[in-house]
Image 1 (cartoon, rainbow, N blue to C red):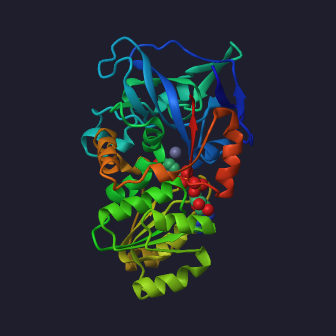
Image 2 (spheres, rainbow, N blue to C red):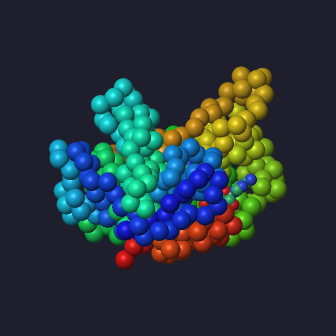
Image 3 (spheres, rainbow, N blue to C red):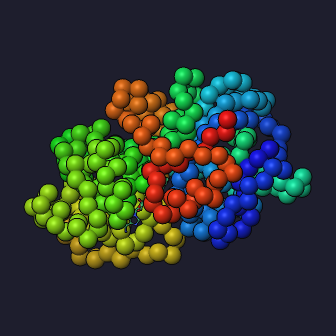
Length: 361
Ligand code: PAD
Ligand code: ZN
């Protein structure tokens, strides 16, 4: 089958090849025929070493497809089921899962770095990004990593839930816990940032300021619920105008850099909340004033996978989509084939798109 392989961290292109195979399904696992997969900035971050990945690896972690085979002992899924791929499966039984932080479940983390579900060349064991690897016609996944959805949901729409939309809307609702009538600023308006903006709108924020240096993103941000949109150099004026200089109730960093994390922290009002959604490099240090941390009493937190409880939140997101409150259709700026994956990374780097979805039919 066809799949896009990263041979070495640091390569600037994926190798789209036809000689990739999967291992046998195995107990507790399923085989999924991928129908659609979004291209997320985290795929680019796996290529450039920001996010750790075992290589060689099939990248891609935001997918949806159909179950074509189930392994022994699989009870919750059957052949023909439509599913969203979850790159961070939740066991439901560990301390984190039962204490209300299932997004931090570590039960299957090791699988991503130890189970090579693919092979190319007939001989070379190949990993899947975060245990997934959706830039492939088929993947083998743990049962817990496939969440069943209604069959009428289009696969391209469903694929977005797997990462960007769950992360962004979850950041707004689960991590930020945005209150109605509040003020919000969002740094970075890619697929994840636009999802934060939609989450803030759904939560009832009165003011939503989008910040991005790409002009086209500012127009898009307004279409998805931002009440105002500015470039980074216009932020000081907007902050004065919209908050009287005191800062926003909530600030979201959706870029993944220390510089924007500091900007988001600074733009948060005393007692407000800063949420770091972007994934930065391990060595990129954020310097904060020890006095300000005390004096301003801001809440600074990260969010992993939108702090999601996937079996609760995927149905909620789909209910919001069905009711017209969560716009997923317009988030898909571009559809393309797996052969064009490297072109997709070019467009993503240039900031030309909200989300690109690779379809397989
Ligand atoms: P994207 O590349 O589509 O969007 C990033 C946006 O940030 C672009 O529109 C850029 O123009 C904009 N940008 C860059 N620099 C600045 C700046 N200095 N000021 C304002 N805007 C800027 O990426 P994405 O939306 O796919 O992902 C965004 C981040 O979220 C990225 O770091 C990704 O790795 C991370 C992510 N986190 C999780 C998680 O679990 N926390 C999950 C998925 C993605
Ligand atoms: Zn992602």
